[in-house]
Amino acid sequence: MRSVIAGLLAAAALVAPGWGTPAHATTGPLSGKVIGIDPGHNGRNWADPSYINHRVWNGREWESCDTTGTETAAHYRETSFNFSVARYLAKDLAAAGAKVVWTRTTNDGVGPCVDRRAKLLNGGHANVSIDIHADGGPSSGRGFAILEPVADGPNNKVIRSSERFGSYVRSSFLRLTGMPISTYDGQNGIAHRSDLAGLNLTTEPKVLIECGNMRNTRDAKLLESISWRQKAARALADAIIRFETR
Image (cartoon, rainbow, N blue to C red; front, top):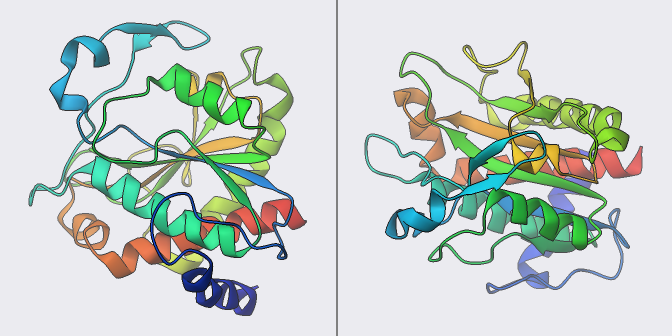
């Protein structure tokens, strides 16, 4: 699998040299697959608090449309991190033959709301989707966590497949990024959540990954690194390929 991923990464530069939605290859392990990417938050959510704070139905209860996200002590913003990893991931997936559907394709807008994000990926007929985030946890805490859905109606049919996908994300992230499992969130890197619209409303297998803790000095150093973000994208691509081909 490592040699396959390395070859795909080399091809990605040819498949999608610029930005936009990368053109997908005609062959590859993900040929014919649709992959959903949700880079959490958006770069100007802070500019429209009335919109971001209005309430939306998340499948169980009302929650805010979105938030502004967090940032490191050096003011590297989560919105930028999420979008950066998403861009690298999209290129890797396109090189593997996948079509990518997005919840946002820029980092200078507001929204969409979390319920709308779920509907965009559902409506795009994604085979599997990933929500990309970084956490703002206690400064003493380290590591990544995989957030998985709890059955609530719309997502009932994808609970077991989401758990299987989450296991691949966990193992790939451990193997390829050097980021440890969270010391403060979930158990052994997995947390089941019933309060997130993106997971509650999904109709395809989906997990949310908190790639690390922006408030922890050691995690922040990794999250701020371009080369580490490329590793994070590679790990997510590896997990998606394994999920779709096994």
